[in-house]
Image (cartoon, rainbow, N blue to C red; front, top):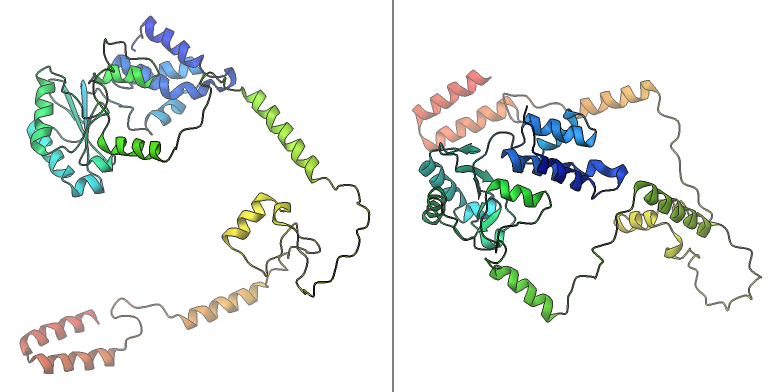
Length: 366
């Protein structure tokens, strides 16, 4: 079993410390990236390590590691090349890009070249339809790629170079990327100084600036509440809600209002209803359905279930009225009608030989 380095163990403790003590299980995702950063994939030893530091069993960790495609379960190359072959990119040539790379590298989906440099995979969606067809190298984007351009990128990677992505920082290896996904900064000099945003992204920013749209302010140092604190806050909110629902003291009798001639019945204001009831009425309003909190109404309840013999009679009547279709002919057609239609078709076309063959086939089916 692999023995992880002391640096990995220190980082694991730092990751776990980001979460409240009673929510340490939430650290599993970054921990899986952390062990992948050391071994290049999530090995059985990595699963055991995560289970050990979090107090989980290996089945729980393995269930998560096998669910997300970013966690690789076998050794992966230095550069993970992902080509989007989903609908939009496929229409624009994504499948052709993937097929060209597979032939050029001599590998298929989720396979690694003999030199250990490139692992190729087709991706269902890379969330960049406006830049399609797209390809990523260790999750950094190469937009609007064509087969020749994609081959040039992988050849440069195999030669030891690091081509510049269309957007984002300069390329790094998959292990270096896994460290970042675990929540640690890229310590390479000038690692985030390169690259730039895409034109579609800039267009969105310009529109936001033009219309004065900004993200709400927040304090990044806001601590995460523990489960006990969250439960206490929820209990207080529930108590306040129940207190608000308590009947108010009787108000003095109001003076009779002026008669307006309206015959519409009085109803409660919408704000007096619970949010669940208002939502249900908005989605499917039904005047015949009693509202649970409306005054003077009672929600109807189901009566006694029908007797067994009644249910059986109803089922028999339904079967009799809906005879199942046979395999030999369309539902509702009769053999006589089929033969008549066939003879008419033969007479019109005059193709006696073809008509005989069709008749023989029809007779065989019967």
